[in-house]
Length: 286
Ligand code: G4P
Image (tube, rainbow, N blue to C red; front, top):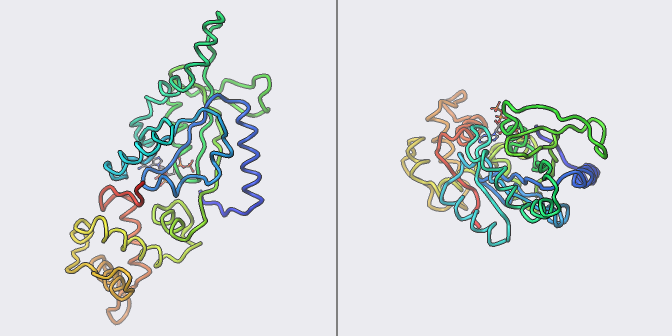
């Protein structure tokens, strides 16, 4: 799903999440492990305030493991509990209830001290489009999937999904807008497919990807596309075009006269990159 965000949409999204916050104990904030800051909502702290929060670096299967380690340390230093996950296979997902329990320990202990049976912990999943919210909900629901039904104080139609480990999820995640403040961020989001390609120019996105690949993952890139010589000056557009032409020739993206179809080559490159064919990569470091 790709949404174009306008100020009105943002206000509405924020209000919807704020209404849901009243119903839950904890927020599971999903970030893309390949670009944790660019995939983070710029107003998230202001929206969530002091609500306990678990940060999930999702799609960690696609990210550079060394960079993910650095990001986990970064979020820990920020005072957050953070955890890597791959919602599509379920790696790192079964640990979530235990971590939520750690976050809510004081609250649960208080309930027990008062002789109460601790009720199910309730969570809301939030994140920008395409970060894996629905995938995570389905994975956490697993065969436990069951709507608990309306409860007092719950907006009609709002359903709770039971997961293992005494944790319930609101069935509809909170959808947040990504950072847009600078073009770099836009390109990074576009490289991973988080924002619509049509918003930006496909060749520009691919050019951005090439610069990044050459800089940080040069030998893999060179090997995959059989590129003889990597550009030396990444600020020289001619050198980037030459590399893209090599990619296009390798993949048969040709137009009449044997010229390379740069648009097609750009699509192919981004497709292979997103599909993990160039290995695991991270587009930003703390
Ligand atoms: P959203 O609700 O936040 O908008 O995201 P959604 O779950 O729809 O996931 C968006 C895409 O990301 C899906 O791929 C999904 O399979 C993929 N995805 C989610 N979590 C992970 C993960 O941890 N690792 C990897 N590798 N992929 C993940 P899609 O191409 O849109 O659909 P499909 O190929 O699954 O049909």
